[in-house]
Length: 120
Length: 113
Image (cartoon, rainbow over all chains, first blue to last red; front, side):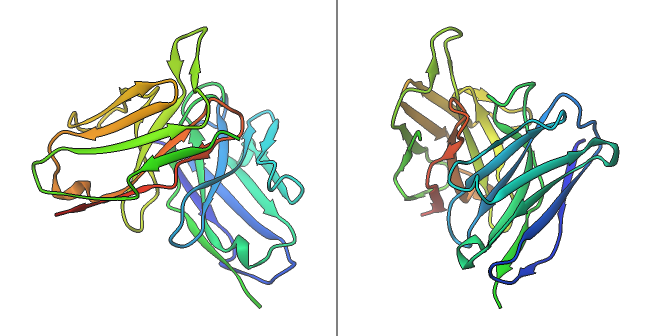
């Protein structure tokens, strides 16, 4: 059973960089796309971006200038960096796996999510 | 962007009754070359991550009870719960993966009447 677990600071100061890691267990990262999705408190879901195990990335254009997603398959994890954060970036951040061998598929495994609050 | 609009925003249904949630996309998510609708449904219970229920608009994910079904094509889709159980209280989201820019509906909150 594939499991995903997000980790990282729960509090980030405005203008700084949010950094999170998703550790994948119970399965290989190979031949899958991996994604970050966020959910502001009490609101809906916003897709942030994908990464393939090769390192190819696709980002939401609304966040593209501030987002970097990277992968380290040797450590079975992938990471999110979001720069110049503001209070609007306060959200629960989820990592998730894409169901099939290309990104035109739904998300079948999700982490439990981690709340990141942007505040001074 | 493909905008996904769900209706209603909230819904209260009696136990054992049918619940129906609608999702409309701003453009078709039907890929003509394979006749697949790139549309999925998720269930999110309080304090939990979303759970995949339905994909390709009507394919039930493994382990999902058969009271959950999806239908529709093109731009109009429906999630139906045939006989509501107490454990089905949740927020339900539709999602399109037709476009590289993934988008979700705003969510429909389902409660017991």
